[in-house]
Length: 102
Image (cartoon, rainbow, N blue to C red; front, side, top):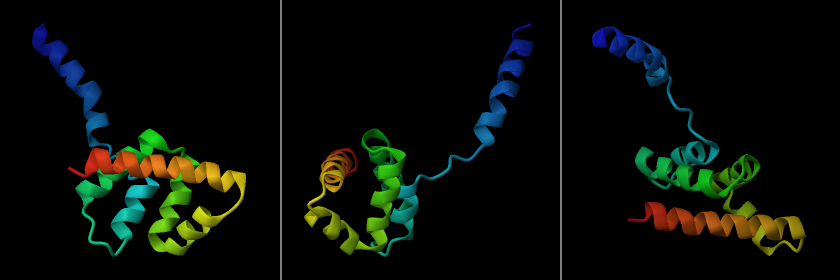
């Protein structure tokens, strides 16, 4: 009876094990960058982004990998929305450094 229950549980979770986890926007941008990042580091940075940034913020921040000038323009911007985003982005950076910097 135990083997039937085990088989049923295993059959129920098997599909979940075979579904690849999709990379987030930060991880994809990190992997595509020319900064020599690796999958492990980029995945860790994505986890930090998941903890600190909304999906929209992640997509916006991911653009900074290809266009660092966009980050600078956001940083010097005088708009309230850019200032608020920059504070969240700084928090993400601090989290990523603490979480992945090891």
